[in-house]
Length: 169
Image 1: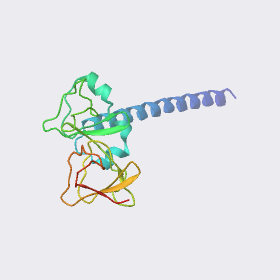
Image 2: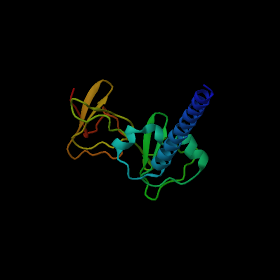
Image 3: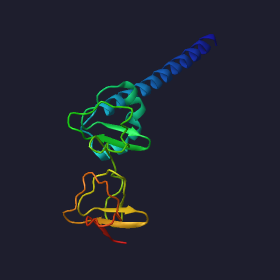
């Protein structure tokens, strides 16, 4: 009987150790994935959108003060941004990705929609808008006219006198 009790206690201890090791491995795996995501400049927009929580927050990047390489991805609020400035950028407090005039440095990532008439992309200031794509804005659907690429687009659909936007519905 004593043998069975000692054997049971040993089995419980081994199980507890395995649980602790599994938890540590899970934490280390998440941290490794975050390091990979933060340093990767070759992930596609779709790949980035599939794992947004792995990318560093703007506040953390700013606090670290390290230069971000061209192609890096970061989160600002709920939006992912890619560094598009040649040579990268060192984050500055008064120059957040969503800030005015920052489109030459950061671009919002949006590929959850196909950009077709049936699945238009919700228009966001600063996103790249290419000829033939469809966007939704204020309850309407717009198409980017042939030859009307706007990279980055700072003119909302409905902008008076702008031929690049065609009202579809």
